[in-house]
Image (cartoon, rainbow, N blue to C red; front, side, top):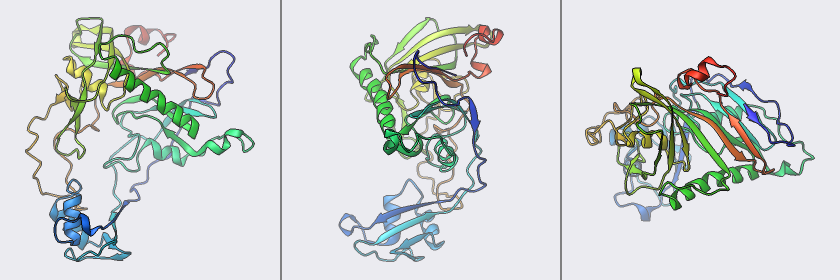
Length: 389
């Protein structure tokens, strides 16, 4: 639900659900490159170009398989000879075959909508933007497929209107709850600046003191963690950085002293002694990837059923080199899915519950709340339907 500021134009129809069922197969992908001979350290053959530049995509045998399968074109012509010598300026295109993406929910609830922005309630299991194995089954695809009510053609904002709303921040695939999307270019820039400002403030205020009195956005999450927190409140300022991790090409975010500043304020809502669990609210002043999962694990209380992070904010899988030289590949030549947990794995209980923000064009304060899953409600919230969840 959303609460508009006094005197503000009421939002468009909200609290409705939309979504189109996913096709069985996605449309595949095409990746384009231009060959520059000066950049080549070895013989300028087709197989050397792909196996050296895109090691994270497939092992050498996998790239040979893709070439012989006719998935590479050079200057518009299919090439099946891995040893073909490339010419300066040649245009190369790798055509990734269509595939069936893993299950993902497709329905999205609209919590708030006006001419500038949309607030969605994202279900757990749905990725926000295309990445990895999920290229179609994303929030972005559903936003693109829907017909949206945009400002009328006579409106001065029309020239700033995008073809469809776009997310201005991310939530982990396993995280549910509030996701803000911008309808106009101006709103996109403004909302993105709010999130960037929070990260900058976290860097300036690593001692846990109040971060500014004029914050443009405040975000609050609900989480279920393992163990019983001793103190009613805590401020976590542990930096978050990247480490090598098999199956994640760009690396894995973990608690890391050399990482970027991050700040999370943790507040105990309910201690569940019989389950040895604690229900907490977390306010984040920065938005590092997997920040809440890492920070709660860092202080000794990982999220219940988190498949990846353990105490200390590190991955549960410790033998980081055991699969790095595995040359097995899947039907399309790419690597098989790693056996160890990866960031997109679900199962944990984390929900973007509510936020307060300055509207990107009116500057009036607005509060938006996403309904809580039953498991993340306190006893009072479960017993009293009047309590705002």
